Image 1 (cartoon, rainbow, N blue to C red):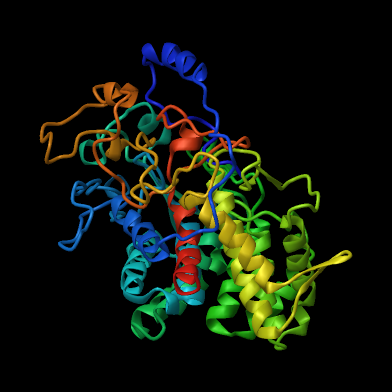
Image 2 (cartoon, one colour):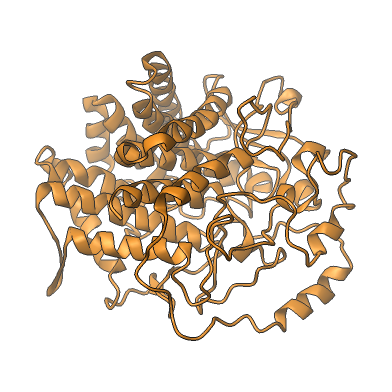
Amino acid sequence: MARKMMSSLPGNVPELRVLFLLLLLLPLRPISGGGGGGGGHDYHTALHLSILFFEGQRSGRLPPDQRIRWRHDSALRDGSTAGVDLTGGYYDAGDNVKFGFPMAFTTTMLSWSIIDFGRNMGPELKHAVRAVKWATDYLLKATAIPGVVFVQVGDALSDHNCWERPEDMDTLRTAYKIDTSHPGSDVAGETAAALAAASIVFRSRDPQYSRLLLNRAIRVFEFADRHRGAYSSSLYRAVCPFYCDVNGYQDELLWGAAWLHKASRRRIYREYIMRNEVVLHAGDTINEFGWDNKHAGINVLLSKEVLMGKADYFESFKQNADGFICSLLPGISHPQVQYSPGGLIFKAGGSNMQHVTSLSFLLLAYSNYLSHANKVVPCGGKSASPALLKQLAKRQVNYILGDNPLRMSYMVGYGARYPRRIHHRASSLPSFQAHPARIGCKAGSRYYLSPNPNPNLLIGAVVGGPNVTDAFPDSRPFFQESEPTTYINAPLVGLLAFFSAHP
């Protein structure tokens, strides 16, 4: 489930090898003495920043109320090579490609954050809703043609060979699609989930838009289910090794059906889930959750109805969810989940904070469902109470905000010490205001190699984070540690909303 198996580095830079050797010799060790104390964090401010980050990731024509002012319009001809309008949406991370798979997952998780924790967001709620709509407006464009989903804009190899601002982009903007002859049930299933989840967000706010989202979700899901296959097979050269679906498309079909069940309340989706539970491997890898693997999320989402006493037919999903919770408890050995010495959840692969925020979100969501049902999770001879799950989730959030061996926040702009050299093109290059002239593909390499802090603060960005020993290189070439992503922040929005109301 690691993000981008290839580094998004500017290619053919002769100084890189020397730079890497020098960086690898640096003593990247934590400060002794363990993590910080028991919190005292300003979760309201952190919530504000975590949502603001999404405005820095916007593609397309920026609105007048854009709050991150060093960004400008970009990629205004996206889709033109295919005769469609694919402007808008989000850049997934520190590059200038629009990858549909992680963008859809980001949208689903932002929506779930609002559905479960929107009541705790206060004045930030309207900004969170706008962040969802920026994504869904794009996903509606990408699914406008029946039997087709545009799943990526931009040639990743071309893009990753340059270090340039999105406003200067002159790399290939190829529009990649799946269709009936080139299926992609994984990305289509996730897109259906995103549209369905967002339809719940807009149900009372904009009923007409909500109906549009739900109807489109139904159509996209039918396409995903009828024409089964992995988009990595259909579009291997475009999406691999960046967002390859390593895990298979079966979980996305169940995930899409679960969100359509929640959004539409139609019996057809409940029956689909029950009929396909075994066929689509619902019990596999129950402790994984992220843009590539939805199993733990499916189990937690469907368990809410079981705990409310409304859906005994989903009991097996609750058992899977209980197993997932037990696998995360410190002190219970599980081969796929470990904790750093400083207490951070750590899973193999790049961009570890994606696991931290996604798994912590599920801990918190499940703890709320358990609380309402007055239940605990049995874990062998132990039991996990809702309070314990909240405590575990809060510990992860506090680690991100500064309670860690390095005494630094991993959110840009939060606290006195945070990453200054994040792997992000727009943040690391001079802004349009500071440098109106174009900065070409290779001309940006000197900014990439510079030891200086990034000139533009990407406020609210949470980076990939420290390694398993709690060490962190604040350096652009270490992209797995220093690159932010939208799908790190999306679940964190929900977590911060809850803890801002229940500190």
